[in-house]
Structure formats: C-alpha cells, structure tokens
Length: 270
Image (cartoon, rainbow, N blue to C red; front, side):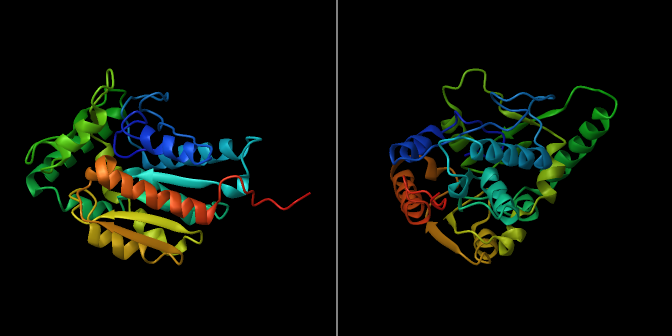
C-alpha cells in the first residue's frame, strides 16, 4: 500500500491497513523515497520513475517473506498511488490483483483543471528548478495544496481542507513538493496502460473528483479486461473518512475475499 501526491503513510492509510490486517491479510504500507520515513535527497522530490521502482522493490521484498504466498499479492494505491498501481499491474503479471482508489490516470487531464496562468507559473518554476538541479542548487519547493488561484499542485475548492484533514497531527509534515515534479506529473498517463492489465482490478471512482477527472479515469480503467469499477457520488478527499470510507473498505474486502481469500494459498501443494 502507498499514498498519493506528496502524502506519507501516516496520512490516513492506517485505517485501511488495519481493516485488511483484521481480515487476515499481511499488509505492507510504505513511503516513497524522498518522502516521510524513507531516505532520498533532495527531500520532497516526486519522480515517477523512482516511485515505480519503489513499488517494484516493495513487491519483491514482500514476495520474499516466508509468511507470504508470492502468488497472492495485491497492490493497493490511492490518488497518485492509484495511478502507480495501474502502471505496476500492467507490467507485473505475477500480481494476483490490484485496487486503485480515486486514481490519477492522466496528467494532461488533471493539468487542464489548473487555471492557465497558474499552470504557466508552475511550469516556469519547474524549468528553473530542473536547471538549478544540474548545478547543485537547492530545490525550489511549491505548496502541495492551496486555495483556488494560488500557486500549488492542487488548488481546488476541496483540496486544502481535504489534504490537511489527512495530514493533521503529523509532526514536521512538509506540505511541499519540488517544482520540477510538475514535469513528471504532466507527462504521466497510467490510465493509458489499463488495457494491458490482466489481473482482476477494483477501481473506486469519486464522481465529483476535482483532482483526478472521473470521466476520463472511468473510460481508461474500463479498458482493463477484468476491471470492476465502483462509483461514489463524492469528492476526491471524501473517501478517506466516514460512511464513504466504510463503503469503500467493504468493497475492497469483498474484492480481496473473491480474489485472494485470506488463509488460502494459491501455491500448489508439495
């Protein structure tokens, strides 16, 4: 399990992990390099390539554990991490299943939600940051969330309140990302790989999503041969708490029970 844009494992993932563990599953929740409890310099650098490498490393480590059936591993990701899960599921034929919650599927579609002037300012900062990194200059950092019209990666009506509700109480949480990360985000389109996914995939779509456009995500993930897409009439950040959380978790547990029943190995008998 891993989180979304600039978020860390302490930001609302424990309730999901506890439900899965309570149902008999072994759960690994990890932070991407450059964020949270993981190492990596500069801090707050979002690199799609490196984050996908982190997913591969996490899966390889889990599969090496004696208590884990390597043929019964499921990847779970939310928001930007939901996009990563789609990418990993498209390339890793050993995955037993995948769960993508309110997944980021198309960088261009998400960027079009940003006002043109703000988009230009972010791009200019990103290019300055990238150029500076070649000469060893300190990274330029941009707010992860902000009010509409502000310079931030997510500046929608619900983003600031929703994101800060997830990160409240985390000591020394850095609510910024390197500006150069914009260039990675815009070019990333994990939803375009959905037709290559062969394992069962459960996708939770928030129909009022202001960050990851629901219509585009639905069209893309529906191309996966074994996709089941569930819609919730809520915003991007609503699914982490309250009744939407309860409904989503119930759906995930049902999917897991049908895909990799707890306590039942897919390995052949000796």
